[in-house]
Length: 310
Image (cartoon, rainbow, N blue to C red; front, side, top):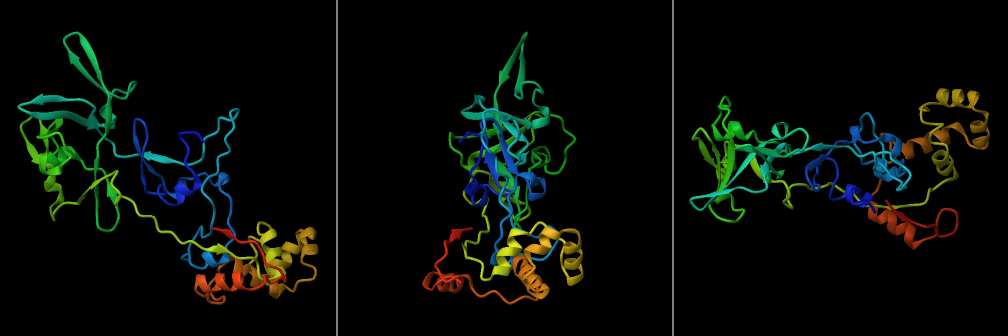
């Protein structure tokens, strides 16, 4: 697998929407579902899971964008990401009075071509590699954002255009030994960001930075022939919500009408409701007993059906 691709299981667990991911030169946040390429997502038919989704537009189940690796293809994988955080720190710094000082700046202040810090020393221009800053801000409701370090070090003021440095009094990552300083003379300890009046300081690569909400079920065989037919023709029945809609669909699609010639309209609508998990349908039992019943007994067709994990 290419090093710049993620497995589907990783997108469901460790690197879903809102997760921060380290790349060789940058750190990014996986964008929301609205920015994922819908053309590369495969629909998932699992009524029991669908019934547990809140009502709203776009309600449905699908895989993350699936990318077919092919050396002759140059299309993007289909998963969007946002540069985050946008503050970077120099990969190397100076030692002053036993303290390590490294300059840090916004991404927009980096050299636009080389994406690095450029320092002028005499007639020489020295290129200094940078790395994403380790710290971001988070609140108790799960929101995350960049810290405006210029405002932070000046305790609310942002008019100063001095250069900022991250200073450590020892060669560890201890927050208590880390300070932010401005060339104007202002400074502030990093641990103050943990105070009750500030948003919570979060180490972006920490294990508590992202917690996915997951639900695992076994995909059970369809209970009726109507269910199987509806799943097979789900795209053609996507706009059907009443007997009138069904009559119109049959009127303009004789192939669809022939497929359901032996099925009553009420049974088709009921199967559609089960597939969509619509409100008003039968209340879904707990997942585990239902799965156990299928595993312990014969399938609706009289033989044991294969189960797949969703």
